[in-house]
Image (cartoon, rainbow over all chains, first blue to last red; front, top):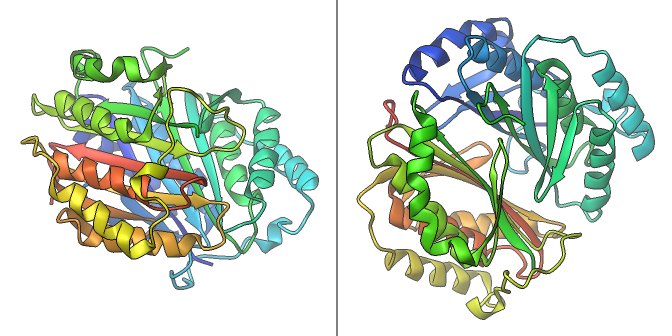
Length: 202
Length: 202
């Protein structure tokens, strides 16, 4: 199954180029696990879905460490028709993807409960898009149930759900939302925004 | 039908608050046509879908005028189940939504050809998510065909398609992609990113 993300960092600072370049070393441990392509709009990461969220977490935390208001946006996708299988991507069946919805919610909660803290507070919002599925709203409501019980739930908004807390459990929650919901072989997209150091943080 | 967007502006500058506040007057002509709610992550606009794209265009062009590298991100949605109909939103049936796919492509091209220029060059990328539809890839491929012939097509990337050109036809293309494709009564989401003044622009 093809999986990956288009990722962008937006540091709200005059020296945004330095902030971005300075954060890239946080990405080094993951670099050989992804195929990476960058242009002026975003960076493509192709690789195993369970690697994408720790990599994005470490990148965003590194860029935010200096106190700059910094936003990470990503479009994460798996199972997109028309994309070739890539040896660098792995299936997610081993993660209990065939379990009933309620059991998947419990498994996701256990992962988030064990997520390490990073010391960086963030706010985030996510929209989950299970595509081509007849019961797409069941999977979305199941995911929302999980997010509400994750310990980092913020609030429900139109078109998205917000999270607040340490970047560790927040990115873990985003990752479980992506990995556990929607058909395991189906086409699923997740749109996410993570913000640190906002002067208007609630 | 409920329609609206979650919109965020990211000026890459130390005085990002001033840039954002300074751009808000561009939004005044549209203000009474939307229900608006702002938090630290994004601003919700609820209103007629054909008003959303000119409003976002004028906001982004105003924020980018001073030369700051500025990104607008929006999650635009229509027909979301569970949302009440809102009197401020209008249906899109009058726009020929029941026409065959090929005719909708031609109608969309005519709108883009007549879009006024703004003098602001931008790059953009979009992902279209027709939800709950059995033939979601047909609508996506039809939309990609339109975008390729729009005059502002950039390139196809994994998970999204890029546009390059004046903000006028670029936002018109984004709007037509949202209005013309997917079931007229169905649940459709569009994820878009528009960038101006990037130092690494291609």
